[in-house]
Every structure is written in structure tokens, then in C-alpha cells.
Amino acid sequence: MILPVPQALLNSEKALKEKIEATKKELISAGVDVSTIPEEEFLLQQQNGANSEIVTAELQWLRQIKYYRTSGQESRANGHLELLRRIESWRDERAKVLGLAPTNVLSQHLCKKIAYAKPSTVEALRAVGVRVSGVETLCALIQQTVTELELVFAPAAANTDPASHTMQTPTTGTRPIIALDTVTPKTPWKLAEYKPKKGSGGTIIPPNWEQSYNRFQKGEHVEAIAMTQSTGKAIQPATVLNHLFEALTHGKQLEFSRAISSFPEYVNNRLSKLDCDELERASFTTNIDVIERKYFAQKDFLKGLVSHDVEKPPNEKTFFEKQKEALWYPKIRVWTVLKRCGVL
Image (cartoon, one colour):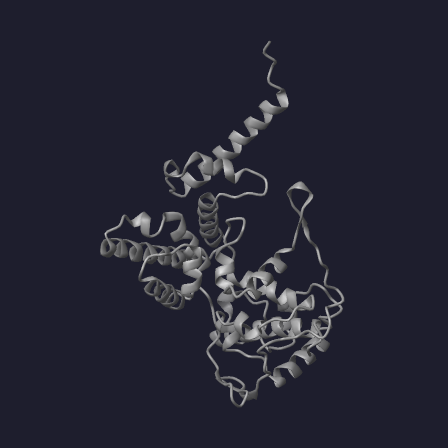
């Protein structure tokens, strides 16, 4: 006796096929040859709690480019496409030198994953699967392209003297910097909430910030953590840094200097005692208490630190106005987390 297939099962299979077809359609519209992606990768992408590394990398890339173009940031879209082109050229050249097929040097989805996250260290590139010789030249290529095409805006480098703990900047002169090699919170922030996630089979999964922190404490580089997530989906290194800052608010000790080592906007822009005085004043004038308020717009805080109108469209701001904002935003982030964990 053959029992009829339950309608619920038929509906589920139909919904799965529709999702897979929708994903394929999105990829095809961006010029991806879906015939090169195994069918099981599309099935894996639709499973709860799972992701196909190949499909995820392709979707992340095309959605990033689409976002830049639909938000009027055509130059950033073109810049990222140029970065991808240079990575692919590096791959093709290394393939010729090593006598390998280009995809054996770097698969297409891995090229896009690298262009998306823009790792600047050899460690991060090796962690994501770049195993061939010459990876140092790829690292240098990414760093050069990111700087040349301004894919990551960084403030002008300050002249920092670690011995005297002073910093010389073009706009502020010499300022004594606050030594932040290892930061030990005096107390967890009173508004910090520990929110673990539910996993399969009733298991409890640590929150994202704690997963990043635990890997960092084991010696992994911030960029390596960003590129090798358990979900297969790369995240931005800045997201990992935010996780580490959040760990401070939960009372976790942090090797601060190592955490920020890949971020010029922090390394070249250390917090000074005078900065802290100005930030305290801005907190008062803007009525933003970072300890009592869980959420606030950094742009609103910035209004207490600069004289120009921060609400102006970016294309109406002068270079020096943009530079001032770029200098202050990292300091606002660091000062806020240090206040919340009782260090300042």
C-alpha cells in the first residue's frame, strides 16, 4: 500500500525549490555562472543554521556592489570591482608561475570573499585558505589598492612617540596619549546584557562578541577571525573589533594594542588626555551620557566636538571637515567603551 505524500511535505519541497531558484536568479543577474556551483551548495544555503561558503561569498559580493550603486556611491562600487580585478590578475599570474590552474590558486568565490573583507595581513589570507607561495605579494597588493582607491577612509597619520607617550597631529599639536597596551576593566558596564543564542538540540551558543573574544584570546588575528566564521559568511574586521570592544563592557581584559593593530584610524589616532577633556565637555553639551544611555548616534555626539554642520551632505563638506570627523569618530568609540568599563 502506497500512502500519499503529505501536503505539508510537498509544500515544503516547493518552497525550497523556489528559494533555490530565487538565489540562482539573483546570482545570474550579477553575471555569476551558476553551473559552476554544485547543486548541494544551494541546498546547504537553505538549511537552518548553515551556509554555503561559495553561495554566501557570491551573494555578499553582489549585494555590496548593488548597495553602493543604489546609494549613489558609484566610485566605491567601481573601486571594489577594480580591487577584485587586481586580485584575479594576481591569481592568474601566480597560476602561470606555479603551473597550476587559476582556480587551484584561488577559487572565484574566494577572490570575492577576499575583496569583500580586504584583509591586510598574511595571517588572515592563510587562514581563509590562500596556501600558495607568494601570498605576501597579494597582501601588499590589497594594502596598496585599498589605500590608492580610498576603499577605507583613514585619517592622516599622527607622529606617535611610544617612549614619551605623546602624539603630534596636523591639527592639534603635541598631546600626551593614554597608554592602552592591555586594558583591564574595573567593572562590567551596568547596561551590558549577556545574550547567548539557542543552538540545535537545546544547546546554548555564546553570543557573537564572546566567540570573537575567545578566538582572539587564543592568539588569532582580528582579520583571520573575520574571514573564517563558523557560518561560512565573512564579516568585516571592524565588526570583530566591535565584538572585542563589547567584551570590555562585559568586564573582559583585552590586549588593546594587538586588537587595533590592523586599523590605522586607531593606531595613528590614539586617545589623549586633552581628547578626553573635550569628549567629557561634548558629553555635557550634547546631553549624551554614554554610561546611562545604551544607544546614541555618534553624529549627535560629534556636534559637540566640531564647529561645522555635521548634517551637511558628504559632497558639501570640505576635506578638512571630513578629516576632523574621521579623527573624532574612532576616539568617540574608544572613549565610550573605556567610560563604560570604568577605566576612565
